[in-house]
Image (cartoon, rainbow, N blue to C red; front, side, top):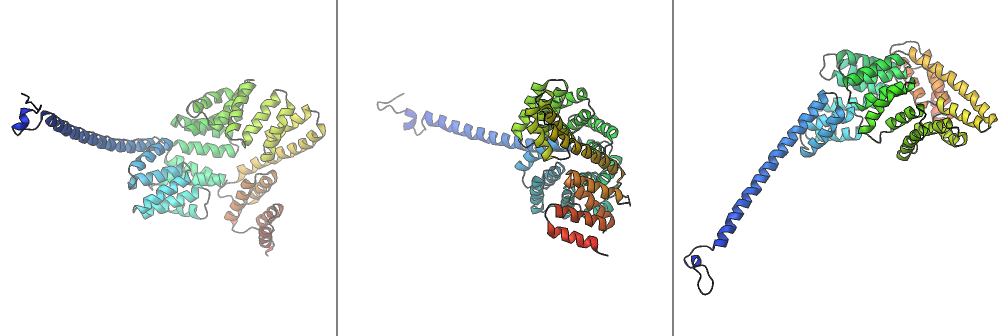
Length: 435
């Protein structure tokens, strides 16, 4: 009952107002709800962390380091001091060629007290994989035998490093050993195919790419490599579905865009092919491949004047690009520029002869070949046609095999004089003239 002043009689009897009791109940319920939510969130977070780790492990087992890396980035963000997570993230980033990330994760692993032996091995593999081989490969091959738990990772890094250094015979041997140890590793076949392709062993390269694709049908690199070789062998019909598959998942993939543009150009669908090339040039205005293909498409449309600047840029940027130079000659002839076309046609014939001989020599260079003649001649041709990195790598390989070789030093002296590095030229000439 209410009194005149409106107070609840429960207050006069020493009780609490009904509204206060309800507020207290709400507060208790609210605290309980918040606590339940916190516990649920903590439980979900633990579940999510565990799930991310399981995803990463499963991706590694399925030879899918890209998916593993995505899971590991999230895992380490939630557990930044987890040693296993940091180390696996460092290793996976290194395998993917993401060296800054690999170094960051490895440094964090070391700071948390990780294994010094694991750190030392990863640093060796990181150097080797970047082509900074020195004597590290000899040490690795001497200490990591076929039964070593890390043998496949070592062989993978060696294969990639030898390819980076253009030591193709050594790369082929590393890939063969890798396949012998783990025939189910898709990248052992994929990298082996790249080596075969560079050594102009196209049938075997295609066989290796097909095997890689069979083992890893969702691997972007396997799809692109298989399609690229199909295009080189003038089979755009076989290449097209693989390139479309890649672009459905990675719409801005430059290599796939250019490959599909080639397929469309082969179907006489120049306008659509040109749109794809323009997209690549918008993403990467300095793409030599895109400029060359743009010129080729315009040339097939009969517009030599529009094609000329693209083809000229592509050839000047890559002087060993036979297709760009051949297209430029055609574009000049269409415009009636016969004098320059004739001059460049002579260069084209010389270039084709040189590259044919270079391919022949590359097949002769094995990892244990004692004769330095093929290596030296191949280096001389590579430097002459503008494949500078390949030429220098071949000369470095020759010195590695022989220790000291005057003709190699003489060729290095000639190269350094040509680029105006007289200090280095004098050093090399001194070694060449040494009795």
